[in-house]
Image (cartoon, rainbow, N blue to C red; front, top):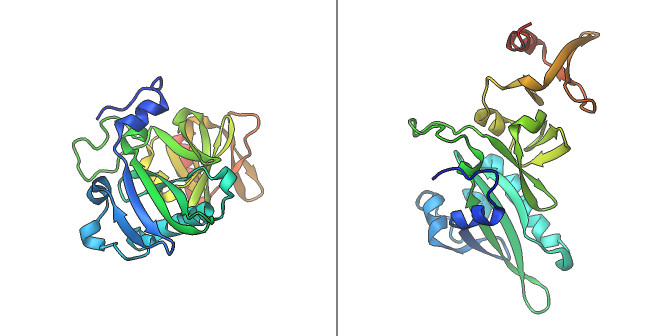
Length: 246
């Protein structure tokens, strides 16, 4: 499948992909799923029917799915747009949305979990094409803002900061939130372009303006007037200087 161009609408993107649908009961146990979900998810290995939905997600993704369901359950009905999240499972990027189901009295009776495989939308065309087990590199990063998904172009990113199971991106337009961990993103970004300079930070090399010393610390400054500086781990200073041609 070819990667859609920037000019193509969101509706076009949705029409290009089949949708996975999973029906959960009020206790978040799997009741049913459509054929596409059976194709994408490891149903035979995990045997999810009658189990809590998080049981067939990777350990690192379970807190994210729980958060998604909790948000859907407690969101006021007047603002009950589906909650959205991005999850890496394991070599795919899935856009997941959850809606709460309720009876006439408004009591929760279950949930509908819907997902799209957006891997090829956010990945480099041809990446991994000749290596079936290779991780596809990202050409844009999926972020979630107010329940809506926005794809951030790599050129707009200055640095990434780890937030436990998620990551926030400092872009030229400001902060953006991504539900993928910084480890997930490190595996999917071009190492010639993005470098993990600290346990909590990854920088885009072309966006770096300078390095400076502050006491015993080394800090990175960026080519943007409002971007904060970020620290560099001691063992990363030399590789970073080499990458910057210093």
